[in-house]
Length: 234
Image 1 (spheres, rainbow, N blue to C red):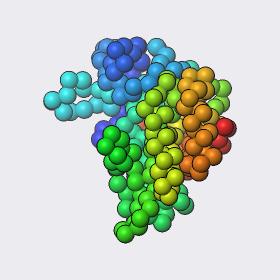
Image 2: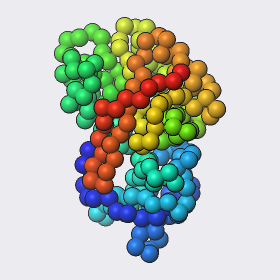
Image 3: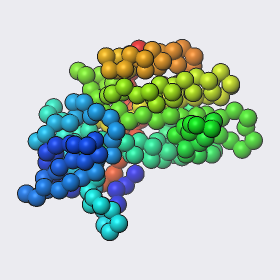
């Protein structure tokens, strides 16, 4: 996914009201949109370098969107939760992983019941059974372990239950954890934050849900899914 314009460097000053952040750019403090509903634990560090994307849309109230923050260890962390869905879809269309290569159709935001949608569905014309994918943005790091979630997520718990039900119905299902940082050595659920999510993820793995923690390539001009899969510690 290429950015429409090269990202601009700034200094992250503070986040407030969840979706707003003060960022200093060339000595001027601007308000940037924070496209992330999580806590950003370990990433929400005032005074750190950051990167924002500018917009020329005159209808936007905020000109800038916060895309990345550099944490004290030196690693850059992508915080835009809209990015993972875009890059995983690009990767699915490019058949990045072997188990995606047999599918010719890639659809986004697929309705699975009256109340829920999943992020992607891979299929072939005429096939009864599909391959469903739910995508989760991962920014939290504890030691060298990437963890999800960074706050309690009842919605995420519901998605795991829905994936297990689809698996029972004969479909193949997968949850992709896009790790938007390159300093993680493995992946695990954040049990100390959401013990129920961890329980459900372990249950899902036992039922055959594919768990794919994959590192994201970040730069000032584009972002993409790498082929680096992290070992899973459940």
